[in-house]
Amino acid sequence: MIDNKFLNTKDMIRLNIEKTFSFISKEAVKDYESKAKAAREMLENGTGKGNDFLGWLHLPSSISKDSLNDINATADILRKNCEVVVVAGIGGSYLGARAVIETLSNSFSWLQEKKDAPVILYAGNNLGEDYLYELTTFLKDKKFGIINISKSGTTTETALAFRLLKKQCEDQRGKEMASKVIVAITDAKKGAARITADKEGYKSYVIPDNVGGRYSVLTPVGLLPIAVAGFNINKLVDGAVTMEKACGVNIPFEKNLAAIYAATRNELYKKGKKIEILANFNPKLHFVSEWWKQLYGESEGKEHKGIFPASVDLTTDLHSMGQWIQEGERSIFETVISVEHPIHELKVPSDKENLDGLNFLAGKRVDDVNKMAELGTQLAHVDGGVPNIHISIAELNEESIGELLYFFEVACGISGYILDVNPFNQPGVEAYKKNMFALLNKPGYEAESKAIKERLK
Image 1 (tube, rainbow, N blue to C red):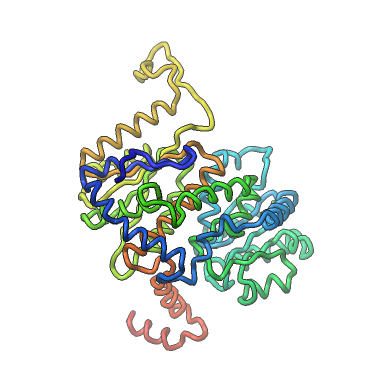
Image 2: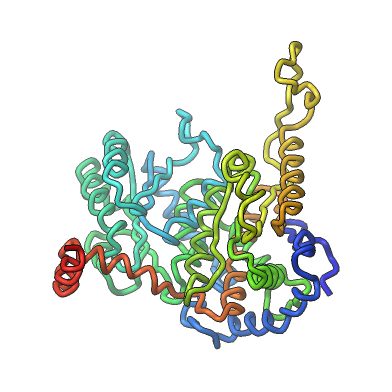
């Protein structure tokens, strides 16, 4: 049986599902053991749907020290020659890197005059003309480099941004220097980005054919930007290796965090909880939520089924979405990520006049207040009909984030197979592209252009 309130590995990640048991039974979660075991074995043996995209499963333990050294060496070149590095990519081609960088960075480091690493900016993830104009204007007097992440080199958002940035980098820094500070992460042999990289002599890395974008954070797609930002990718990978072992195919169900999480959320889904809200009480985790939403939304949202992934930043969103979560339609459950130990310490001062009435908190750490807000919110939401899963990490460092990311990845694979969908494709993403290309009169889309114009009359 699942007797522990917390399941944990090395006292870093801890999983608590106790506050779901007034909505679902412990026995019901336990009943998923055979399904979860079968799902995990399908991942291991490559017998499930999408089995040609399982390169991520043992990626952490297969990354060689030489590979990490090479990525770190390239990062050093960019760090020494750039004030700003723009990561051009969309979806999994940038979200994993941004999740780690934003989590581990000083929130205000980009405003400081003296910087320990280049400012990391992002492009190719939207088609906003104002955004791109403002970005290129900001870069006009900057020594900048580019990490272009695209398997094909023809994804519209990324290709358009790279075209703009490549020209600007060459104009400002000269073609020779530009070729040293532009790095391509793309297909091994084919595609526009590969052709450009070979022609221009860019340092390049390969996106493995068997790793989909949303599972690619531990490939050069994520590791190079993270290293450029100044973080220890060796420790990030070490954390993922720890979780790879802890969620292995031979780990019993009752000790396997990923299997328990997948089983719990699927049982809640079966009971009518169609929306999962990932909540955090540390603003640094915002982009972990954005990465998680893509991972689960793109993996499970198929065949008119799947849990809808949403997210909130708390306590901030208690003053906006809090009302709906507390008293809205009871179709939701929460998964809360909690950080046990902040990096810094800040205490509430005493105030002689005490006009704000906060002297009762004087001498307490701000995190003590935050933790009580977290506990109070959790109790209120459970009382209001919202099941609550709790994930706790020791602190925001490379090892714990590596664990967390891999935990969510393997749980997603298990959960998708329990749901009986292919967790590794995204056929629905192509629908908007076909319409967009038709509306833009892209060569090769003449028939689609004619049909869509008739439709819009």
